[in-house]
Image (cartoon, rainbow, N blue to C red; front, side, top):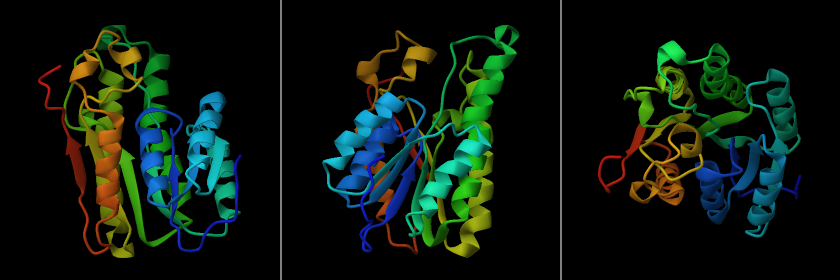
Length: 242
């Protein structure tokens, strides 16, 4: 854990799955905007490497390994957040997993459970814990993928988890609208991250967007005045169909 006294003028952002890919790119982009960070991930070695990099930008970085599917692990994470004695301004629910391309008839039940738990149940656990430390003016961004509205054969558990996460996100937005907390559904298309090693190892990465492009779009949305927002951020690569 890297920890320095927070700067009063800086906002605090918590990012799950921040040790690689889109999560790390968003963490970098927010740090460059002067945000203090709480970053989580299950891979402690990758998390430590990310922390060293983000530390050099000069913001507070609190790094904590967390299994977002585990209520006790999430509770411990937010106990650490409360010790910072500053409200949480931004929550980026980014942690997620995929599964190998398998038709429903062949999909193992444990795989189904793991994907649903990580992509949907964990979204509920982290968001519920975060609401206790967020105030008016905060923003929640849920990284859902374009699979929240489209169907990809062979990805039943992933599709189901992301469709469910969109329903959760839309409900959350309406519940928090009177409280002045913005809720954004981030729905990127094919992005060049490690998730393809599971979903489609031979996917044409050169046609995909970069994680940095997705991160820049998120930051632009966060910089909108508090009395305005975007409800969905849909990004697609221009390099042709994959």
